[in-house]
Image (tube, rainbow, N blue to C red; front, side, top):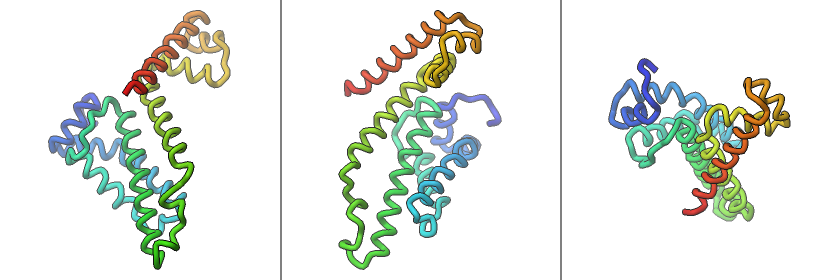
Length: 190
């Protein structure tokens, strides 16, 4: 990016029609999102029937035109939203391909339309999204402590890596844990 803008400013400029900001967003996030689409289409075994570039370009166009009325808090929030939306677009593409291939709707696999575990999967997915959103609100130091602690490192090992005492690291972890719980509980309130 040519100038130092916050993500929110950059996104707002892109929505307002600034071609440089649109190009910056496209270059910064497009490659990752295209890979996500290509991977999902290959996994669904419909990569032969759906052009990932077309799927991404139509989606990204909707975002840039301002048809999505979401105030993105951070790049992570933007990426999470895009990945979730693109998963849904891939699922729609799968349905479309299956319907085109089937001579009648009875030939379509039932899981294409109703999956008994879909609500459980959706709930798990939404919970993971909430956790990722809450996690993105932590400071870099808190995320590092959580990462190493989840990896089984002791307080002393983490403290040595960060140049802090074990008790300071434990305090950082406790504060991060409290913030995560508060964020998750606040999300459940709605």
